[in-house]
Length: 433
Length: 199
Image 1: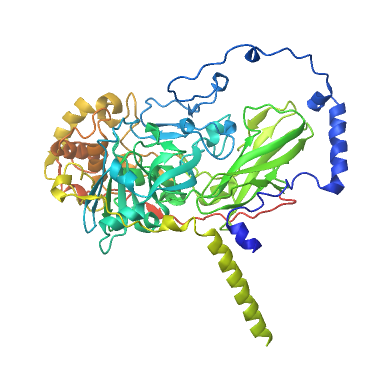
Image 2 (image 1 turned 30 degrees about the vertical axis):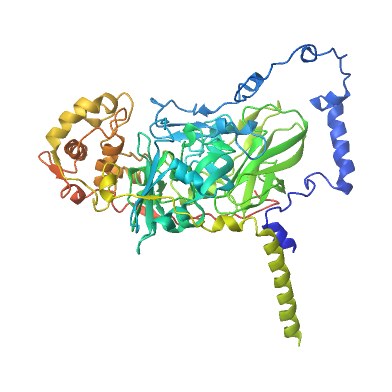
């Protein structure tokens, strides 16, 4: 029974934090904390006397009235929470470019729609849904055309999944080039995707005997397309028109995109206009000259679709400043091949690891939050996380990956353990190397 | 007797597990079943012609009629591509070189160009037609795209200066990286979940 419950997606999620010292150790833990509070470290904030309180201005007048219609925006005090392009190098054009999600500011496991990472191959098109058409043809019994109204008349399906660009982290394999987790890991977002299973429409068109692959092509200025195996398409892929409760934003594929759970982001073709079924891959530029991985002996790995199990600490992370004493280490773990079963955290540069708490719901191919209560003693430390997924796969170090792949140039699929160093002043820095 | 007991208790356990999973299943079930709805409108293949631009690059299936020479390609390139890609495709204001790199993949500086990287020459036709020039994609006609494909191949030393590209000749150009790809063989690491004394 316990096993069934665990498989339904709630392992450890309801448990109390295991990393808080249990009864026997607790007194020692507290004593240590007290000792620090008595020292120079800033843990003693709670001991200082608070100043007298005045009535805040917000209590003493009208607030902003309700407009007849509006679309709510974040507080002006959150203006720094924005997508950002890479700051490691400067792209000379911003049409085939990318921008990254501010992961350290994401609470929970849903990325707000305005902060979903972007990767386009020729900018964001502006598409009128009334004029948009989807076509299915090739090795099918009956080529079909759909309007958006047609597609939205089917029963809808909503699922939580992460999406990650295969290039996430490509600037930071062997040396620290990025300062923040937004720059090192921000080609990662997650949310609730709504649409219809691809299998429904492929069944409606009727796959011809021998159909094994299909291309999905966008209506953007790059005509981006990828070949995908029918097996995956019939398994869990979706034609998506909404994300997190509203229609897709233009930069996320409005009005229609493919969504391929657990696979590299670029195969989830945006602004989808055409599906063509065939018996073998097309070998597009985007699956030969790009989105392939350098391997030893001058080779390239093709169709490396899976986003393998990975995790990163988002708090504390690069660019932050922490104080000695209590610090909850938080982060994300995810796997394109299943469910996260465990996340371990090290605070001593990888010598010892302790299991973190997973915060539910823990879902397949979804972002999972982990937490670990840490009492920092103020000495220089290196922290990192390591995730395990339901296939038993353990997130590797970069050194382990570098033994079997060629880390040269723009290398995709960086799922290595990612350390942050903290110096005696509490400054948190990228420690990959 | 003992083994019968084991089998029986296993059967009971299975039955309980079955009940439990059925209790959780109903919400997921409707997702899997295709509704009895058919909303797609049949469309004739001929009416799809303007959209049907993909080339199966390994054999060139889908390449249209038309032809273009290396010399014509240079003229079109200088007029429509040079501003971003630079003279002789050696890199310009916006993009790096599209020439060279053949033989570089076994070094620590892999140079990726259409010449060094593309396994099949028709990728040039497919990509140029759908995506170039970036401010006006799908504006070039088939003759122009064949000519540009030939020009880039010539700059990479893969076809002679008097070559003419068409649906027959383009797929026959042998690309040096044709056998440079391997299938995904991950997981390729076997990390161990060490907890104590790990390094």
